[in-house]
Length: 392
Image 1: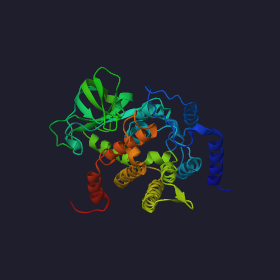
Image 2: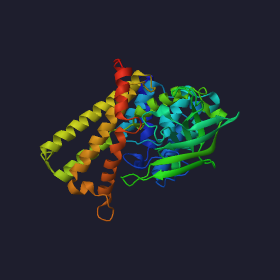
Image 3: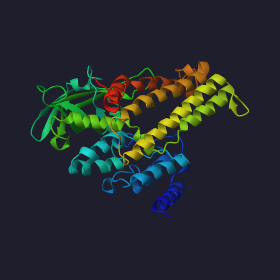
Image 4: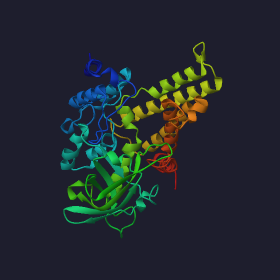
């Protein structure tokens, strides 16, 4: 028996013995925030066990709290988690964005201070990129950081900072040389959110939720030790982080089995009925089959890209994942909403049941999926230039 076959058997046995029933299928997931308490006992138990195993971040080095898995082992873990429907024990901007970026571009000190805390679910991060007037044209950002020797003093504003109200730290792009061309003179810094110079104001969305925020800096402090990369060269770091964000790696780490597909089919059978095991509406049946086939192909493509990149994050091809993945999300929630008929558009909690309200709120929320994390129009430009090699 090969060493990989041994690893698969050991992994399967460990998951079967250690993944609680309440951690299989949809449910709460820790993001590591010190400001959020998860009350579900199975979720907490699963997190503790995965932290001890190093599998909150399975392909990170052991010295930073990871599992130290090689590419082939990592893929096997994904497959075995998918086999039992295990959801991630930890899912955060720390594991999917700033953590992988620090592994590539951080100093030894930055890795030692920040990565183990992410792996142990002790901290959650938020992203300080977009500003009023600097969205798709991010390089026009104006938030200033003045070099004061051992620290930077930051003044300005960020917007659409997801989860900032629950975050402990922020990774942030700031302008450190206002006289340089706009893609230059930008630095990438890390700063704690719990300090007098940082103010967070939630933004209420049409969906009724407030996942986004405005964040204001009034002489906020970032230590010089938390400058990632060179001063005035942060644009390169910021772009690499976006590739990690757009890769969809978090869904692979989770061992996702596409539970949304099962839910969609189950809802269609429940709401439309079935005949001889088939959804009793040819039009919806065709649309649901098309969605499930496209979603399966998308997951396979993501996994193949990971395998071909030795378990790391691919480069510009992540823009393809962003475009296709966001449009798949919109298709899914559009179908789920339309299946419910009039109830699929019930936004008032006093008039519709919780499932109806949740469905329409998700439908509204994911309309923004083709805009946030870099609009799909911008991503198509990146695909044309960096993937297909087309001229400007």
